[in-house]
Amino acid sequence: ECCFLGNLNSCIHAGDLKLNIYNHLQGANDFYKMACDEKNALGCFNLHALELSLDDYVEAEKYRKLACLYGLKKACIDYKKEGEKYLQSRKFENAIQAFTQALHLQPKSDAILALRGTAYNQNGHFIKAYQDFTEAIKINSTDPHYYSQRAFYHISRQNYELAKADYTRAISIEGRSEFFRMRGLMHLYLGNFQGTIQDCSE
Image 1 (tube, rainbow, N blue to C red):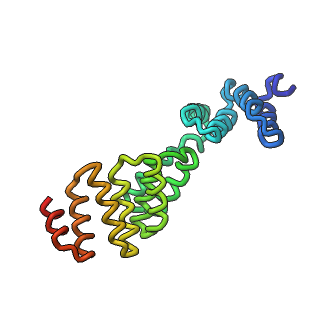
Image 2: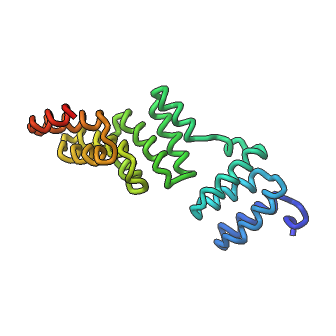
C-alpha cells in the first residue's frame, strides 16, 4: 500500500519480499519497475539483476544504464573496459578482478572469458586460463586465438601433442604465421624436425 501511495523505497522492499521470500519473479519485477519508472536508481538496478538471473542480457543492460543515469555509481562502471586498461598497463591481478566483475554481469560472454584468460596466462595462472579459454570455446568455437592461448597451458605441462592440436585447430580457422611458428616449435619439442621445417616454411 505504501508503494502504491508513492513511497518508492516501499516498492523496492515489496519487490525484495516477492523475490526472496516467495520467489515470485513477476511480482518482484512489477514492484521494481514501479520504482524504476519513477526514476529510482536502485529499482532499476534491481531490475538489471533480475534480468541477468533470467539470462536476458539486453534488458539487463538497459536497466543498468538507467540506474547509472539516475545516479547509482556502481551501475556506471564498465568492468570490461576497466579490465582492458589494467591488461594494457600489465596490472594483471587488477585486470582479473575487473573481468571477474564483468562476468558476473555477462556470464556467457566468450570475449570477457578470453580477456580474463589472457590476464591469467600473463600472470602465470595457466590452469585458470585453460578453464576460461575452454569455456570461451564452448560458447564460440570460431575464434582461433582462443585455441592458441589455451595451448600455453599444455606447454606449461610439457604436453606438446595437445598444444600442437590447439595450434592445428587455430590454423584451420585462420592460417596466421604466428600459429604456424608455434606449431613448428611443438614439432621441434616432439622431435619431428620435418614438421618444424614445413610449418616454419609456411
